[in-house]
Length: 80
Image (cartoon, rainbow, N blue to C red):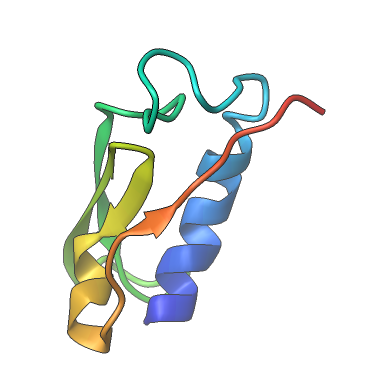
């Protein structure tokens, strides 16, 4: 399930490649203040849940991954 969530998130995270981290105050990232709610489940099947992904204070968090022991993680964006 975690791998599926991350595989679905990866393209969305790459789509911010045109932005750079560190905009605004120190400790802030380019996505800070954004919240995404998405369906989760096995690819090709009906969604069986939802996940909320937040970007705050330069960190990324997937609430759906909390149950697996994951917490906040620093994220970066880059210009190709």
